[in-house]
Figure 1 (cartoon, helix red, strand yellow):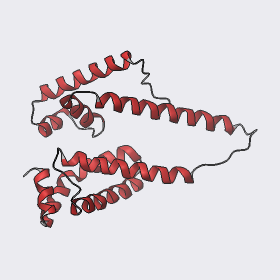
Figure 2 (cartoon, one colour):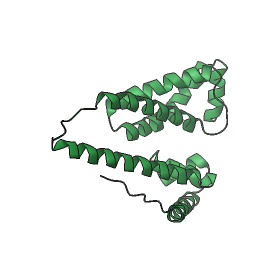
Figure 3 (tube, helix red, strand yellow):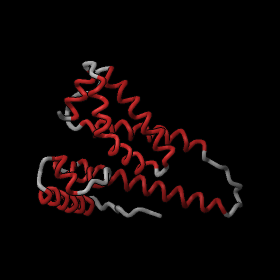
Figure 4 (cartoon, one colour):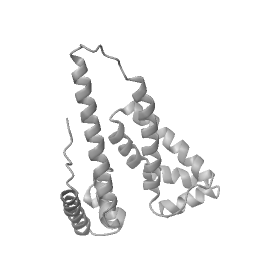
Length: 188
């Protein structure tokens, strides 16, 4: 059975279907959350909140079988991470004295954060402009850290097709970034 079929069975009241579904996607989701958070404790919190929210959404009929279940759960995880980041970010702000040497460091770090945030938004927009097969492979490779063999198995194509789609995705993203004069260099 597909993940989507298991999700629909769970909606109909089959709890074992959700157990199977969780067993299938938990490693991918946790890897994605770890990639976002870079902190195991936070990742565990976000991961747990993700599945609680997914269960609630499934039970409330908010899941539509429109594609890959794992991507639907990743979107939930991403939104929870963003919400958590906003909450935590407010707690970490420290006021520095005007003449403190650290004031310049704070501005530089904030500028770098803003530049990096814009680069990530630009890359996401470029990825969203790709044809679906290329976008899917790029997402799996960059955000799920899947091997091309795993991508091929997940999408039902050969490894060479996955590699080709990735190649064309990168070529197309480079063309679009040059066309729109986008600087995609992350600041350290």
